[in-house]
Image 1 (cartoon, rainbow, N blue to C red):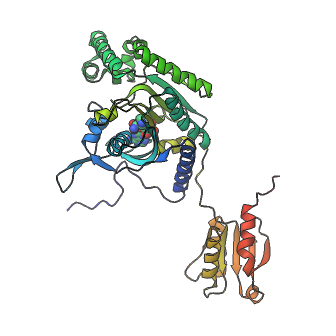
Image 2: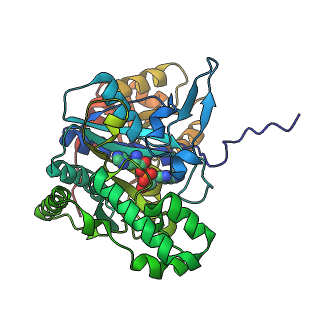
Length: 424
Ligand code: HAM
């Protein structure tokens, strides 16, 4: 039998306490903003019937090559979610909530990619989806939600790029025109170029190969072939972004990785990350997807934000530092009966973050742990103080100590926790 491998699978990772405090901060920031925008949390299964994702794009790498498919014991073919939009649309079609249906989510996604920094086989996304409205003001709202989230975190180097894919008809007509152009002009560029131009001409547009760039630079642009309705929608989106002061760049060669996109598409990139993995979020409209999944015609728009990438961007911009959980008090037990247990319980019930040592350590060792815990106060239950029904409370940063009556200590700590220290 081969040696058992008890490590996390390649391309996956554990998030441990310390680092996970940043995840809490990130999710709280997103949840707060989503609630302010009127979005409700939606939780869908990690596995779906494989056909749910077939609509995402049978021609895309994510579905063709990277999906984790499995057969369950009942013989059903399921897939681990490679992305978050199709499950939300599936839930919409299944439960027919009243539109507009404004949702957000936090979920892991699975893609069998070659792992590297910022690219994993399991990554987490925070996302939002709005179903049932094609008003361009919703496009602006969705973009503003993501944009504000990056700003809340303190990220300053995130830029927004927008494009329009037009209606499915615009897109289909353009794809035909683009394919013909690429095949005619790219004969000298080799079999890979020809193969990709044949299979997925849109994806060739954002290819990075230097030798291809001359042909791509001169390629026809979808935004020049939009129907009047698509053009009007796209102009309204730009006007809305201008009205609320969100800066953006237009890039007609922005092509997102799924087949379901129509109309507005966008991507957020971080200038603090390596160019290859600098997308910290992206999304767009998918006005056909609900219908493709057997639902009523229902426009939709949303985005996904990669949590791990956002955290790498935070590191690069020195915002949202990792740190130990903050404790209000660390109880030092100099008595040895159950009084420390009672005091810690009382502090916690009073809403304070309190901890203690275990295993009958010496008072000296406990003070060391108190210092290391990062707590603001050490609270000592000592035999001398106990005779006066008091505890010794030490400000661990300043080193100063006072005596507080035992019955008042929780209240005393709460007041100090809630008092904003005076500035210098
Ligand atoms: P996506 O562009 O594939 O879009 O992923 C969204 C974000 O997830 C990316 O911008 C990136 O930050 C992160 N991400 C993607 N793949 C990986 C990976 N392998 N490792 C680490 N991070 C990754 C979607 O998934 C669409 N569902 C977005 C959407 C929502 N469109 C409309 N609504």
